Length: 199
Image (cartoon, rainbow, N blue to C red):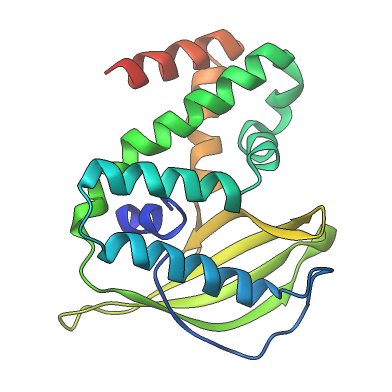
């Protein structure tokens, strides 16, 4: 499940059954429509004949336009965010993307015609919105419930978290990074991410 979540959001989505739109943005696109559109774009990449590396590059480029990396950085680092300098935050974002790519990118070729059914949505605190979906799997495997947490930025919905079967990707990464940060602060985490990127 975790590996496919990556492919589903640009490394982290897949096919589409629509539901009625609810909270429309200034540009006229609802959160559900955002997920549907992004899913369709990801599916097109995954189903294509490009090489695995080419697919990965295209998925990463898509994720850059569909997620709010500044908000994700703040959520992942939590209270540690203010201990990072501007330069360290910039390096963290770059290394963080590389870390996600290295962690999940190898699973792209395991896609086997899964698709996503949008089942509903609900408003959240701070103007956020959660789109609820069901990952429809093949070969008789049980479906997986996946929620997408979105936030508006400049009138556009952007992805800030993926929750698979109740487990938040952001919370999971925050826990991992917190342990490293407690051992040596920002430089320790950046060093670990540099090493993982190089490996």
